[in-house]
Amino acid sequence: MINSRLYNKYIYDIRPSIKEDLKFSSIMEVPRISKIVINMGLGEATNDKSVITDAVKEMAAITGQIAIPTIAKKSNASFKIREGMAIGVKVTLRKEKMYEFLDKLISVSLPRIRDFRGIKAKSFDKNGNFSLGIKEYIIFPEIELDKVRHMKGCDITIVTSSKSVEANYQLLLRMGMPFNNIDRGEK
Image (tube, one colour):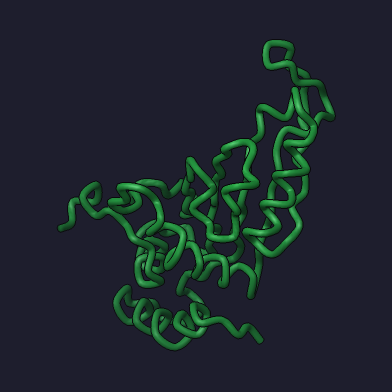
């Protein structure tokens, strides 16, 4: 049983309201979040191997789960990358850790972005998944600024069960995602 504030809000408030508003015939048609993938590309890791170990530690502090290094599939001489070289780290969150991370992202981390005016709602792909890029990962409160040697960004992908962009938009909006509705034509 998942014991998360955001999960309970989804089960008891958000799911029934989306079912009613979008006129789904069954509660199982309502979209749900399947997983969250956090990816950090580290181009400077080609010169300094300690960048990968630092990124794994920092990602573990942010997500509560140990990150795995991503490996280059092909060699590329112009980027000084050889096949099999670690070039980034990633974490896949599911169940309780996923809801805890999303709750922390929405309520604590995103408001810490300088000059924050909301997230563009056009970041849904053709499968209905939402991707968000963060330029500076220091917005997460677990990161100690004194220990940061390399400023890094990360990509966060929220994978959902539905392919409907509108249903997934309503799901994330009701969970509290601070969308900038100007690009959707809303006020």
